[in-house]
Length: 101
Image (tube, rainbow, N blue to C red; front, side, top):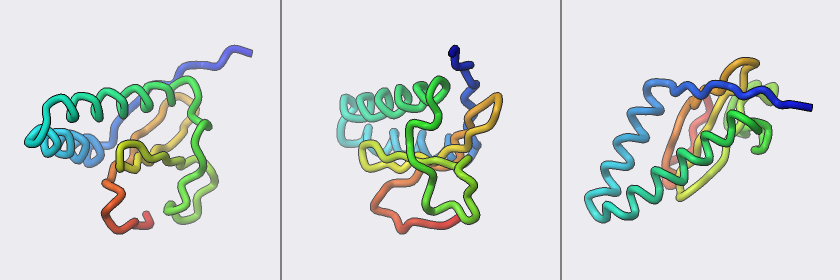
């Protein structure tokens, strides 16, 4: 069975937060910022082939399983799985209070 590749799309607030987080890490270490950025982007890219790899998002209210989330480098990435695309819905540092949405 051939799995179709879904397009990855970012919600604007998630993209802004991600860029700000990487810029914040750069203040201490350019090398660490690049490592975090590259590893998060690689994990997100993998979602286009295997979006169900991560568990449903426990903070999404009334989640039917289409919202999923994972943590990497102390960042929690939540995404929406659709037929044709994956939407990166939010990124938050794990030290922040979890918010239901």
